[in-house]
Image (cartoon, rainbow, N blue to C red; front, side):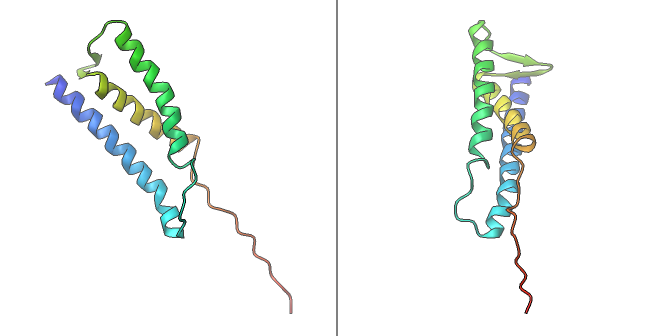
Amino acid sequence: MDILLGWFMALLSILAATILSGFRLQPYLAAGVQITPPTLALYPALLAATVSAPATFIFYWRGRRRVYIGPISFDKQQFFAFLWSLFYIGIAVSLFPYQEKFHQHVFRVP
C-alpha cells in the first residue's frame, strides 16, 4: 500500500507542477505572445533538476533501494519526480514570477 501511495504522491506532484506551468503560461497566451521567455519553465526546471538529481543520487548511492517519507515509499524515479515537482513549484513561484511588460503610453497634447 505504501508503494501505491508513493505512486499517487509522485503523480499528484507532477500534476501540480503541470497546473502551475499552465497558470504561468496563460497570461502569455492571452497576450498573443508567440515565444515565451526561458524564465517561464526552463530556468526553474533546470534549477529544480540540479537540486533533486544529486539528492536522489545520494539516497541511492548510500545503498537504499527505496526512500521512505513517513508511510510513503518512493522508488528511484518516483522520488526524483516528487522532489523535482516540489522544487519546480517552489522555485517558479518564488524566484521567477510572471511580470507583465511595462508599456509606456505617450500622450500628445493637441
